[in-house]
Amino acid sequence: MHNLAIALHKKGFNVSGSDDHIFEPSASRLAKYGLLPEQEGWYPEKITTELNAVILGMHARVDNPELLKAQELGITIYSYPEYIYEQSKNKLRVVIGGSHGKTSITSMILHVLQHEGMQFDYLVGAQLDGFETMVGLSDAPVIIIEGDEYLASPIDRRPKFHIYKANIGVISGIAWDHINVFPTFENYTDQFKIFIETIQPGGALIYCDADPVLQHTVADTNTGVEKHAYNLPKFNIENGVTNIIFDGNIYPLQVFGEHNLLNIQAAQQVCAQLGIAPQNFYKAISSFKGAARRLELLGKTDNANIYKDFAHSPSKLKATIQAVKAQFEGRKLIAVIELHTFSSLNKDFLNEYAGTMNEADEAIVFIDKRTFAQKNMDPYSEVVVKSAFARPDLIFFDEPKLLLKYLEDINLTDANLLLMSSGNFGGLDLVLLKNNLLKL
Image (cartoon, rainbow, N blue to C red; front, top):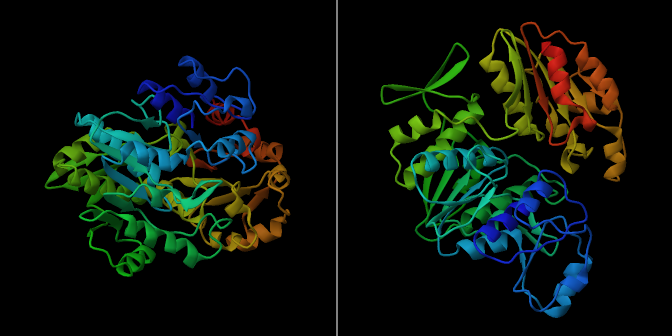
């Protein structure tokens, strides 16, 4: 929301906003542009008929006093995606959907378009090098949108990516997620069928041919749009560097893993639709360093790397572990996952993690026991977790200090440590941990 506020401010709009708590870096960024509210909290008296519109964030409640006042006064209320569509309805809209890889694919496209000097607007879910904010709005003829399948707002229960009405739609893959909203796998996959049906006449669908569920979903959808499948490119790994081989040329990458190679191919297909030649694309993608919190290298020595990744769903967890293991075949891999989201903590969903950590030499699962209380969920035991992951030697922690003590004692000689979470490991200082382990 703060990124959208700044983008609209830069475009000349008069913007104000409210929140019950404003964290960093949002607070500093808003203050820089004179947009930081004087006080936190909700002030319905500030909602008047002088407002053109109210944009409602996903995490506001239906009984929010400012929302109720706006409804009472009949002020136009947009969800976040509705307003993005309102600002881009006369542009070419590229919407990147899928259960995994959305942020990376979107980031790759933005990197290449910027490298090629093209004008574009954007909405992406991570901070990127060379971009001050995660939203950009201008008079550009095209917008690149990361299309989340989660709900638009508390009063608009449509998945976000249905609202954008893509001209070019991308689906990276389908793996059940958000079970608090989509209680069955069929209900979840239906959302992607609907997304395909929202692609505008004369448009195109770009999809991953390596995903059998997605293959079936696409085949089961009858629309008049062009369908373009992508799969792994020709590549090799030499001295810890992944290279794409295209048309007799070798393009070294700064990212790795088969999931990233698939993401690159999705981005290449989009860029081709936007008029960028493959050779120019691969040259530009060689300088892409990755999106924030996606296989982010915290530190390294000659024989050890420590990575932090946003992975939390089963498909993301498995792909990330496979990527690090394949890139450093001779090294031991110690993988740590924090279960933090509603879906990942749901006892009925937990079995979806079976086998996802099998390629790690040492597998550790962390659940901060305070998280169960915060989310009003019933806790479960280590036995349940080990059974769900189908790994008897799995190590389980539910207190941050015990996890920290264990990690501080590991030997990182010829080994990599992979830390995966959408949370913060109970507040652990990962930079200090990295410095202690690598003796920096």
